[in-house]
Image (tube, rainbow, N blue to C red):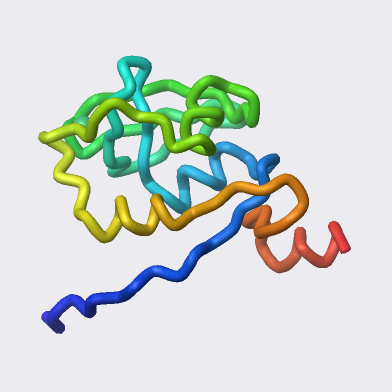
Amino acid sequence: MAPEKVIKHSKRYYRKRVELFRLIDKIKLWPSRKGVLHGIKSIEKNGSMATLTTHCNRTFTINDSRSSRAARWLRNKWFMGVCGKCGIPDWKLDKYNSTHFRRRQGSLLLNDEEFKRAG
Ligand SMILES: [Zn+2]
């Protein structure tokens, strides 16, 4: 196995109205209701619902809503603490820290096909 490279993360920008599922697909973090940030192990999508499994083996059923509590917390990076059992690596938190959400600027995380349609 190759040694992990130390990468200094450049700032990345996502749109505020990015879909929640796309966002968590990308950042693989989930803030629980108590404000604990968990690492996402897997996401099982079922229409507008999804079941998340965290690395500490908790499951959350969520809605793909941009205005949900979790979506807001993720955008604002609100959390009280990080789950000790999930063992979220520092680079992932650094990456999350360097992620910014803007109204008119940044990626909506669309795939190429959708990007063309959105023009
Ligand atoms: Zn956890």
